[in-house]
Image (tube, rainbow, N blue to C red; front, top):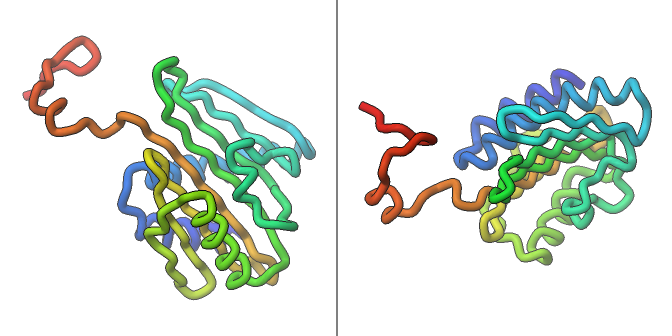
Length: 189
């Protein structure tokens, strides 16, 4: 399993170009450790903590699916865990959700379902790429990004769903041109 996950993240990180998906990868790596620790505690357990202005929550087992990802759970799949991160600033809507699922269906069948389900939810599919035993589907919807990695894992199909939203993270040209240094963002050389 460790080798498979290493391959997935190595391939996925080499293909990611947007900051939201890249931050999702970092979140994914944290999730693996958190889910591993929670797995020893049993089903339905949750751990939350604040770090770096973010509220991090890890959940294990069947009850781990975040509400906003329930429509992206492959039919009949088993959830093993999830990780959520949200900025704690009351004015911020930035968040990232990561979900780990498993299915006995083929990679091709699962990938086809995800492409159809994402399009039905209004997502603009930007990539649907097969690389050996890994299929990556990614897309955007307004300020949100989604990435689904589907891989063969010793006869089972591993599904990793990552959805992130970043509102106002990239300033427009006018904001950059009219920027004035302040306490939070001081002048640089």
